Image (cartoon, rainbow, N blue to C red; front, side):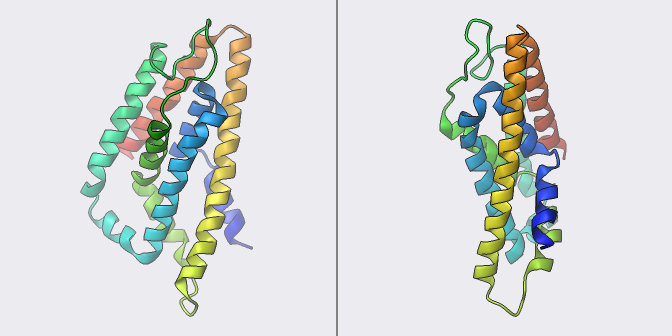
Length: 200
């Protein structure tokens, strides 16, 4: 009874993954953003499992293991954000063609995965919150499968809400002929995620 509202509150709170979902909802649409969500959920599930079995503690003791992933992922997202600001690239929308851009699914999956696993705060969060819900007297596998399933369900719902909100905002701005503003909002969100990822 405590687990579900606790993790829903954490998931719905704006963070790197939710900001990315909002930005992609604006630029590629909810349907295409599902690929990013797939990668993000895989990353969250991996982090949750590793946190329970103790690997996350090792990762937090050696933060240099995150550096390549953090900075590489951050630079890529920053590049996308700059492209959006300049209204160029695969994500950018134009007044002549305001439909979703079809960027490779693998690219979207990797964006979500890297954003989920390259955030040390996410690892620390799972280390702090998951163990109290584990019963040491019961088999671990079944408990872990149940808890991770609940986490991923809640995370997916929140990602859908953010992406849908981004898509709605996109439609409003397109109707008002403010496509460049939409690109700049999405670009700013993407740059924010990049900075958050690199400096967090």
